[in-house]
Image (cartoon, rainbow, N blue to C red; front, side, top):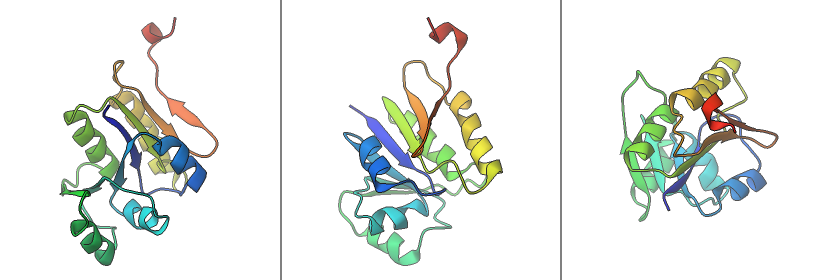
Length: 144
């Protein structure tokens, strides 16, 4: 399986939420989200982004930790979350769950919700979750 949990750098979710949704999934941290995951002792498989918001000490730790892939993608026309989704899709992700993509700023939340439609694939489940809700996109032809 190639199932992924992407942790964005938005409003933190509970450790229970991270554990629940991260079970049997690889974990991809978007830029500054890595620091919080490291503090919670959550195993990270990949760090991705432009590295403008990750602590330099944590970035160094990531680069020197076996088993963690670090991918610096400096494209400023895309968010770190978009970069992560595209990267994982290029690697054949079979499902993607995103946490910490809602809260804090309503403009970021709304933009991230729009990503559900943009990156929708009938063959690859893709949802945004937090401690209280699960958000997904469906086309009329998918609901029977």
